[in-house]
Image (tube, rainbow, N blue to C red):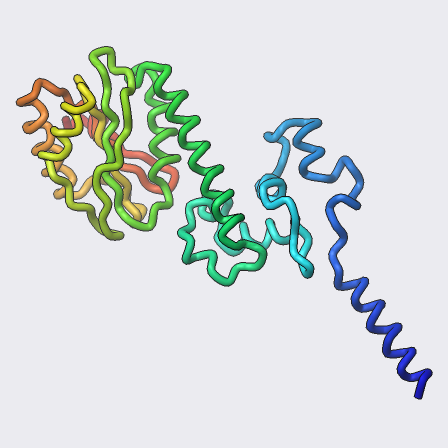
Length: 245
């Protein structure tokens, strides 16, 4: 009887050791995400390694790298993971309110960094930066968002405002509110933008109609509409480039 118990205990200890993940701190230094970042730069890290640096630690059952890989796989990509609403994280291992807050803070910091970069340059001479910024702001949103970039008389960015939110199919846009915001920012021109959660990049008839109404309303205040950009996951449609303004 004692021998049987000893055997069971030994087996349990072995299984516990095998099941327990090795801490990243025990890895060879060259393989640790944080050390790789410090030595070679953040660009050298994979998506999973970047997420692991943010999470810092894993759980009792899963090491931080495996945790990062599993979450990215579950959402489909790092971008979709960062854009996920809080409800989508319910029940996910190792992600509570504190870690979700960290992920959202990092995403917002990236957006603000892009905003600062865009603010320092002329919007008209850097359309690539404008689209890059709008993609970061609007792609992967599960609902439609309509926003405006307000520009000064040299076409430099003054501010960006998210004015209306809608459903997965549409957002109700009120020209009066767009005009009010443009006047409040003392804007001389605007760039309109909204996303299509459906993934269809081409404008709808409703998109064309609201663009025309906004142009007419803003022109009364001598404010030009320079473009209306539709954003999908990884692509943009420009009204200006297609001769629709």
